[in-house]
Amino acid sequence: MQEGAVNGILLKKTEIKLLTNFDLRVIIVKVSNFTNLLTGGGCMAKNLDYAMLLDFYGDLLTEKQRDIMQLYYYEDLSLSEIAENENISRQGVHDAIKHAEQYLDDFEKKVGFVRKMNQYRGILEQIRNCTEEYSKKYGYQKSISEYSEKIMNCIEQSEELFR
Image 1 (cartoon, rainbow, N blue to C red):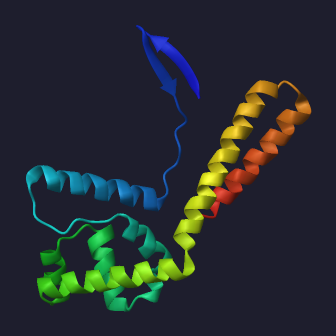
Image 2 (cartoon, one colour; image 1 turned 90 degrees about the horizontal axis):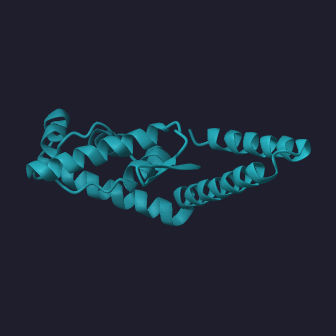
Image 3 (spheres, rainbow, N blue to C red; image 1 turned 90 degrees about the vertical axis):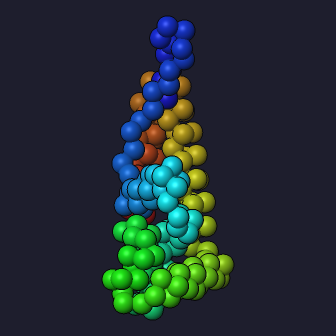
């Protein structure tokens, strides 16, 4: 990370990272929820963790549950819109979402893929930061520079597994 000062204000320049589909979904849902909050729209509060759980465990839900969850979390439809599309009551949609969320929570408690993936991403980020810092300090030495590049390539390959 490079730093500089403009008119006495410390500026930090950071790298632009590519966003995964999940990252984009999270951003869309956050903006949607914020807009809903500002406009006073009434809806169930969405927990964005369920979008990630749905990515990992969605195939373990029934087709109907999965469809409703995808409409709610990915398409950002309201309970009423989903009820109309699925020809069920708004309360039926609410119940289906709550049951599916409970199943997703149970799957995560038993398997822990999302927790492990988040830990893995954190470790990769630490390795990336240490490698970049070490490379900046000692990158003038050819062998260190080459190994730093190899480590960074391994990190990028590991990150590709989660995209």
